Image 1: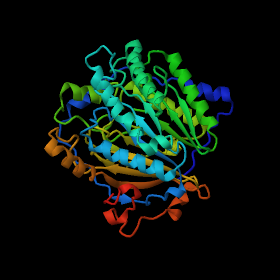
Image 2 (image 1 turned 90 degrees about the vertical axis):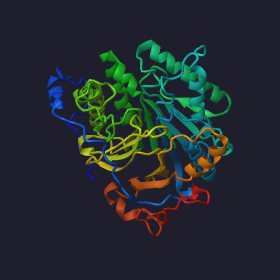
Image 3 (image 1 turned 135 degrees about the vertical axis):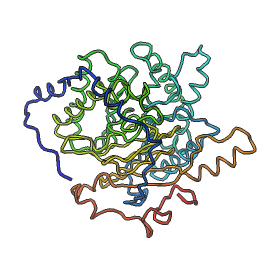
Image 4 (image 1 turned 180 degrees about the vertical axis):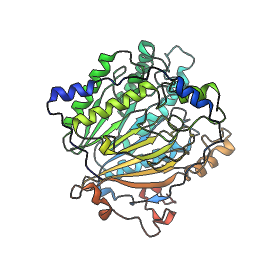
Length: 454
């Protein structure tokens, strides 16, 4: 993989000005809407199949940090969600196996509470809202996670804002933050990042070789202040430049790109309908082709260009699927664009040229940052369509056992080479899967599997 070209801009003032430069928005969407009239639905797109395992799960002694990536888990149920049971087990395993303080973190990638964030305490919705948030907070409450200081970094999405903007939306975020503060008072290392109503970036440095930049993309999509958007982009540029030799992971709710419904997929059965026309025309703010979303990505790219570097990974949720997308560093895109938004809902994906792997089932991702500065990605997903087990006691426990066992390692890829090797030579130094590494169960070594198939 080629290194990014060095931009010709030299002075910090000029680079800051470039980062703050607005992107013009299209004046009209009429042409796109007319073009949409010529299209029709062809049924749901098939889910692509990408059987691939590059590397086996590392030994705990090789691991510096483990990052779990969980998005859009705001409709889980503590008693009925198989994904929570599986994820809790893996967080406990790696917290104990790495056995260092705060060596395991969970990035919660927004839409923490469906359908509209945490209401005020006097609202009839508050009990359900807070329960859905605590379902996720309690992933950090196991004995190993508590003993080792496992960290939870909670980002917000459009639903956490209550799908509102301004003070009413910020109030929902403050309600959410108040619950996280209660968890921290109980000894759970949880934090809302960035603070309610702030776009960030919030900088979290993990040891010496990794920097997380947490941003609130919904703030940008709803902002009416060009000046505040300019200041946000300048802060992103500064945080990128000051990262020096660290891997940079940018965490957000809204993805950089997507093969899902907010990206390239049209809504099934809605061709020539109003929603379809709005999506195709870029009118829906939450879709990648909306003018303000396009501006967000273009201006982040400008900041990356001015900093003369790109994030190793841009991780997000929003689309309810699992996607591993490879970017173009020469175009100053994040090298890898990870969508992990299948925490409680699952929606379709379709093939896209840069899509290395994808799944339309529930699951999450694990990013291992190794002591030799390599970075390796593993995806855990189910192959089942079950989102919640039935409430009936006679069926509940059987369902949970069976459905939890279906969460297995489905994909792995090395994202960064050891420090001794350039990125393009990483294939020569991969830790291969065990025999049978064609994607079959025999080709994966998963020490967290608890004696069962991973």
